[in-house]
Length: 252
Image 1 (spheres, one colour):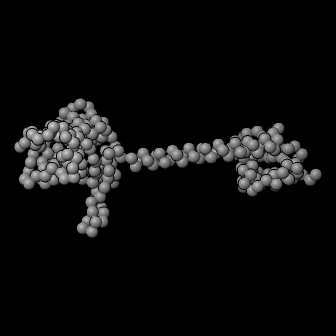
Image 2 (tube, helix red, strand yellow; image 1 turned 30 degrees about the horizontal axis):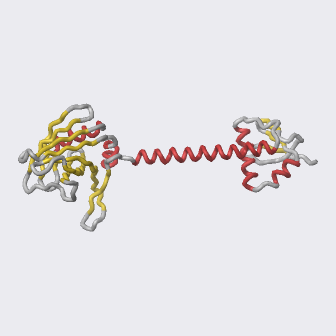
Image 3 (tube, one colour; image 1 turned 60 degrees about the horizontal axis):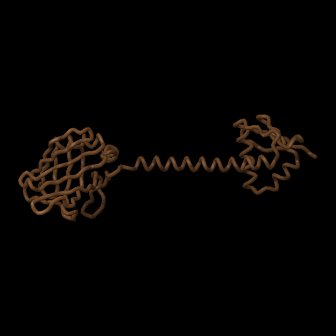
């Protein structure tokens, strides 16, 4: 029976030699003509799989000596399955990493629109929170809060009583005392003013709140209208984490 020699070069090419079914010496494999005939009877996919496994075995120094053709083909199938599982795990980790990079928790980066309804380059951070409010007519009723943050010096929020669609409005300049407890338990006394349909902290107090959010963790709010002290509002941000990530995206 004519023997062919298998040589592995920079671009591995399969040749035939010797009479041992499968004998591996790190840069040389030998096959009988009978084995090659069996290989040639395989489908293209199985043949390519076998070649890939043999090359992998050589580079990783996995001995093939003493193994039959069927055992090597079985090993090659197992190798293919392991490789597929590894690729799936790599892909899964990549998707998780992308999700983590894009996950900003309650903080959503959006953009203002122009008169044509098209997004502009001017962005802001929006966060929607639930709380409660009380006044002379109700007690612990539903409250929705929407934060609108343009930058670290401009933090505003809107109050939606009864979880409605219209924010609390002012036709002058209503001031609110705002107590904030940060994640370290420190209480900050701030003032916000409603000039239209939102409460604005102003530059100094916006910066303080911005730094509180950067710390993450639980942030508690308690506020009331100075002109109408019976109008009280309470809400918590359960976890301000990822605010920094959203802010970095906003300012990048």
